[in-house]
Length: 332
Image 1 (cartoon, one colour):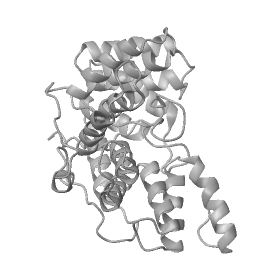
Image 2 (cartoon, one colour):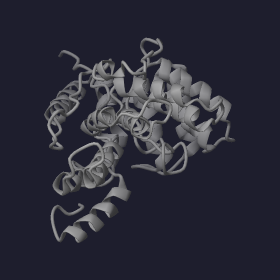
Image 3 (tube, helix red, strand yellow):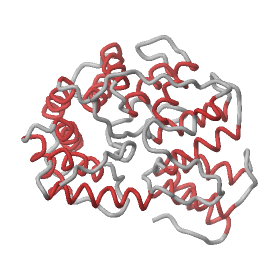
Image 4 (cartoon, helix red, strand yellow):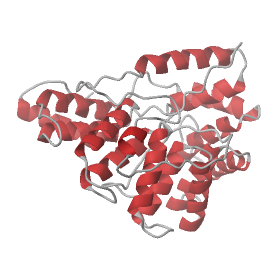
């Protein structure tokens, strides 16, 4: 059986990436990466970024020229999952690891709902067979007690095993552990080193974490321009949270020239990668008419999409917004 192509940017692991407190750039969720070529991503977030930003290093993603909040990648993701499932059933452990990560990435309340005990068994099988990406995902389940009793020590062991085996996702998770001080003493310097290693390994969420460290000056000097370069790198690797954070920088003129068109483009791209923050940003823009033509209908649809992606603050915003409008799509 032919191994299915990897679907970079699809395996968003949002459960462990709350590096910092909420608000501004202070939170994130995650994406998938396998460290095969430890080469640094070197994007630019300067004026000529318009053309560069629409060329992903992974699969091309629509920037959403239509105003409607459609997801052109949805059918492709479903095909990818079906192919991974078939390959996993055929005994291909790398496919099992990727399939597990794809299912683990789904936010609570986002259908189709993952079978946690079955998912745990799937990832345990792939990790035991030597597939280290499966070990990194299995660690996430132990960290959050998903389908298994919560065990931070076991999670860290699995992350370390994956990272030492040159799987960037394991390094990315270790960065979060040391940044937050979960199960280990908080160590921003060590967190930064792991984040750098994962970003060099082309893990999009690793680049987001590194960008957040530069944004906050946590373990490194504060540097908004460098943070934007790293958010750009993450976005190009198919990590929607990187797109959302770069969009916010463009909208606020944070370390970069203010540009509402580029803010919209990156939010659309992040939303099409299932990042709830990007979808919610778009909803707010359409609600206020900020950089786009004001549209209550589009605002409600983007808020609903953000809510379904697990951004609970937009669920509440959607309820209030619909109450004021007197109806429309409800938060589910």
